[in-house]
Amino acid sequence: MIRKAFLLLSLVLALPMPLAIAASADTLDDLLAETQKARAAEAEENKKREAEFLASRDRQKALFDEATAKHKAAQARSENLSKQFDANEVTLADLETKLKAREGNLGELFGVTRQVAGDTSAILYNSLTSAQFPKRDEFFTKMAKSKVLPTIPEFEQLAFELLREITETGRVARWKTEIVSAGGEKESTDVVRIGGFIAMTGDRYLDYNAKLGTFSVFARQPASELREAAEELTESKSGYTRAFVDPSRGVLLAIYTQRPNIMERIEKGEAVGYVILLVGFIGLVCSIYQAIYLFGVQRRVSHQLQHLDRPMRDNPLGRVLATFRGDAESLEDDVEVVELRISEAVLKEVPKIERFQAFLRLAVAAGPLLGLVGTVIGMIITFQSITESGSSDPKLMAAGIGQAMIATVLGLGIAIPLLFINAGLATMSRSVVQVLDEQSNGLLAEHIERKAGLHGGSANA
Image 1: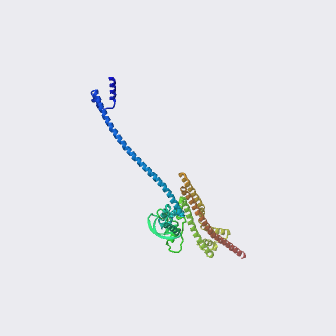
Image 2: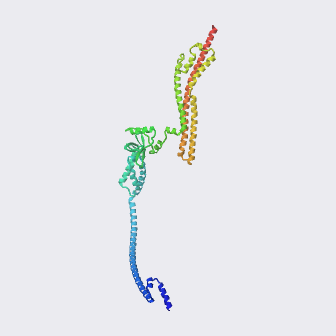
């Protein structure tokens, strides 16, 4: 029995108790008393915890009840709002039906108005007339995006702007405004606008920048003929004058201004082009010099034909005549020798008369050949650009193709005029040589007749 009690006491001691209790107890009775005291304190603590738990449970219950009440109130409000929404939907549907019934054709008119405003907004944004009447497109853009029917003043403004655009497209207008020069500076000047197609100031054509709403001077201006027409138009105050109009509203003019001039085209021909031009220039100088010489020769030969009895040394015919006119003792009796003397005199004059014609024929033949050389070089450059870039982009091939074509044109450009010039010089020289041949044959015939007369007179004697 004592052993069992000891074991039970050991189990009790094994429970979580303060070690101070076991340490302060000297006997079992003390230990029992300390244990009872500890249990009493623990029971008191448990009662406090239980009271706090119950109080917390009451607070939680109160909060739960409050949340439940709010939830029920919110649910009731939601049901009321849902019923009100459904009622509003029905009312809105009825109102929309009444609105459509009362609108009639106004709904269709509104749709057409928005469409017209949207289309017109893009037109006015890029129109040249917007430089004179700015910010018109904003009104059309606002009307195109509007969700309500436009008012009567808005309809009137819409009609007015459309009518003004139609009217301004057919007018030549002049007004003072600021433009951007080719150097980027702003300047105030008078601008002349031909409808909605083209604008100019002085002899300069203008490009309209829709984003900035202002004109700018083209960096490159067109040919002098177009610039003279622009200056004539801007200086005129009344009456009629010529003018150039771009139906694409500046697109064609911008492309036209980028066309290279004659010097730029020649530069594309590079070295071969300069060689061709050098050959052509030399041929032209030689042909002009020879043409002037032949004109003088023809004039002097014509004068000599009128005075065959007085040979003059300033022309080929006079020099030929002078060979046999003068001292009769210098004339040979042998006809063959006389004929050779005459042929010698004529042949002395022929080289000067036919001078440079061989070179001109060479230039005529060499021009197309040099152009062919330039064409081959240009095609080589084209193929190299294709190989290096790995693509057949026309912009990459443009330089080589341009050089090829320019060289061909330059070669034909010098060959064809020189061909006609050489033909003209040959005709002029042949006419002079023909006169020399005729007169030399006449000299020979006269010599033969004179000789025959002398022999006949001797026989009679």
